[in-house]
Length: 455
Image (tube, rainbow, N blue to C red; front, side, top):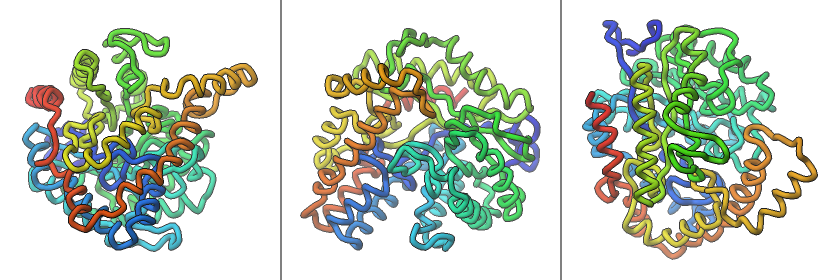
């Protein structure tokens, strides 16, 4: 098993290990831009169940879990030289809101399978709880249908998260190819007063169930603020996320300006050094849990995005930092590979409409429906110039509420209707569109990563 020794992760025989790999986004925690649906996972699943019924919806979603990651995927990642996969999961695989604190052991079935496939190839897994009861941050990726992170407001949600982690830690306590646990992805505690005491409580509970595995702990405000930590826990990695502004869908040229901010390699390194100050001052390992640009389909723009990624990887190499690139597989925005064929034949026009409306945050340029939204932005700027809501300010908050919640939720019935009339074989074929042998490989990205990992 890995453990922390000063600034490094080491094996039991003290061999240093720098974890470098990819996040398995969209699998056990589904995300709208990854598989093309609108809004949040739970709302989408309910809409699809209304069309298909419980049994046939379960057939589709379980087959998707099976096809999304198989032996071929594990072979590809190991063949690139990766030694780590960060696996995001949703609490709902183990616990239902109408039966809180009751653990469903079936939640371990697919996770055990993938951890086993990776371990057989010498690849570690980091288990990342990406969606907690009540939602630990303000966005879709915590399966949040609103803009309120209720997890920090209700002790009951925190109790459930601790209870779930006790079960997960007990289950994996003797798994050597589990590198450790990432118990709260991108916490967004607006006060900054609850997250620190919660970590104190959670660490004690997990250590009681499993004293050996490493804890990977995200800072507050989406893994960027480490002032909330009141102590440096033993055998812990403090995880930063390091997205480059120019690498977002609304990013400008690189080097160049994005929304008034200059971005080049020097700025990337300054941002990394700022975000990693706590780790360097405390002498703990450097690990970037998420980073990576999105791609546009424009060869000239995408070449700039590859340059961003290359610069970031060079910076991490220079500082000895491990990393987990976001994300492995999707429908074409960011993944190393992406689905095609039957799935895009069925949902391609809908995905294009969603893109035109800017209805998911990760794919939005913030310019869609600009004429319709401009009066609202102007009204808020005029009447409430001092309004700066957590976490990213007025412009982002308005877009979240209108584009990524209201419009996205209005799109749900249209998405679900695309399942109507499909037979069982057709549902299975749709899910199998995400099998690696049916996916397109983003060759420049794979080559770039393979070159870096071979050094």
